[in-house]
Amino acid sequence: MAKDTTPSFTLEVELVVSPFIVSMIERELDINRVVYNTTLGELLKREKQLKQAKRYKKSMRVLFALNQQLSSCDKKTEKKLTQEKKTITAILTSLREEYGLTEYSMHAYCTPIRHHFQDAVNVNIAQKTATRAWNTFEKKHFGKAKRVTFVPKDAFMSFEGKTNTTGWRYRDRQIVVRNQTISLVIPKKDVYLREALHYVECNQTFTYRTKKGDVKTAVYRVKYVRIVKKVIRGRKRYYAQLVCAGYPPTKKDLQGRNKYPLGTGRVGCDIGTSSVAVASERHALLCNLADRIAPPDKVHRTIRLLQRKMDRSKRAMNPSYFRPDGTIKKGKKEWVYSKRYLKTKQQLAELQRKLALYRKESHQQLANELLAWGNEVYIEDMRFSSLQKRAKETKRSEKTGEFQRKKRFGKSIAHRAPALFVSTWKQKVERAGGFFQEVNTWTFKASQFDHTTGECVKKPLSERWHIFQNGIRVQRDLYSAFLLQHTNETKQETCIHRCTQAFDNFKILHDNVITIIQTNGRPVLNSGISMKIS
Image (cartoon, rainbow, N blue to C red; front, side, top):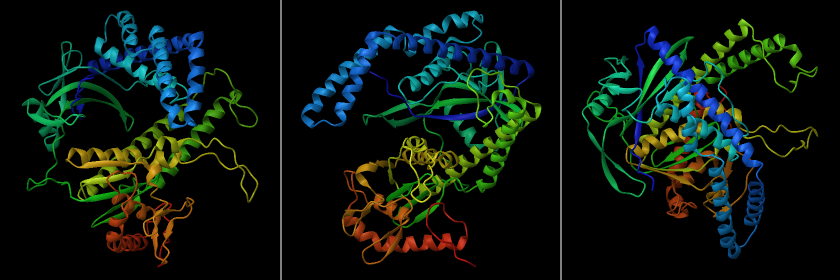
């Protein structure tokens, strides 16, 4: 039986490094890179041997046939087919264990690699690196990724241990490794960091709820230390991430009150790839995601220009690797990069780093604001990774007859990071004692339902307004958030009675939101709201 895991939070503190400490960290990073690449290569070899086995081929054919039968069978035969599938799955699992395709077999495999480097890396750190290689391979083996990528030199950016007793460990506001102690940069103004370290040092207790619903008590402690290298404005900086057991301290204002208190009531949220709509009893919101710190359009344009500049330089330095039509030739290549290309690459990496910080800070601000709206959040269970994939079917346009583009929402999801916002908001609500409920998208059908008629009418994505039979128009995303706010106890559909009672109040909040968007002059992407001409 798996052990109950305690809640965790991470404290990131910069290290005070000397040239000797830098060389020690860099050497350990490079050794872990070798462990990672070697382990990943061994997994691929073992997988190739497994796929050549007749028993594996036969089991995979049976599993494929069972999956096809389960997709179109009735309830009577479903139980029998499910039991057969479990049997085949058990056979495949035993075959993987026989060929050494397990996480713990990789822990044993990385031991000779440590000995090759005179045990310069702690055994727990090496095993954790082998686990990272296994997690990468697992995605490819089970069809969640097409291929794996080996880490080039100087590109391995972190390593971590398993416990705080061996290897790199935290002691008395210092990082201890072998006979070396590394000081931490702890600013006097950082009240949050000092309070969190005080919890750890004084062994304060906290209560948490297990998955089974039991309430337990544990002690604040550092579980393990992660060493991270970052390149900021072209300069290498090194950080220690302390993974601590417990809940992070609550931020407070000057009067000692919670800075972001949890409200009461129901909140519905319709999350999109670029925007978010939220409805509660007293508030409503429709805005672009990750648009609160700085307009990202200028940054995105600069990134595009830098990428085109790098592509031109790459083609100019390696003309023999490209066909006359511009496509890349197949086969192994040794690319030659100019100094200008490497300089442009650093500029691009710095812009991407800033953009990631903009997104994270913007999501944090919005989640803190929504925390006061209610303690029961209802949101659709969206799989954004599926929306990033290109369309499989090739279609022609009815107007022009040309092939339509297969790309879907990959770029907008990368720029706006809706999944990051959902996880940030969920973490804050649950930490404060609220409930974050995910509603089944297929059964709820928030964008198609009409609470006045009780019917679902499928609408194309281009139709951004919902029109009732009496002629009233409401914005589609805001109305979906309103329906999600009033979901019933089963979380399968909305409660028509609640919607009827609260619709008049929602309509007032809805009109205020539309007016604010039109007067501010900052359009919401894919909302269908036209701006007022001044």
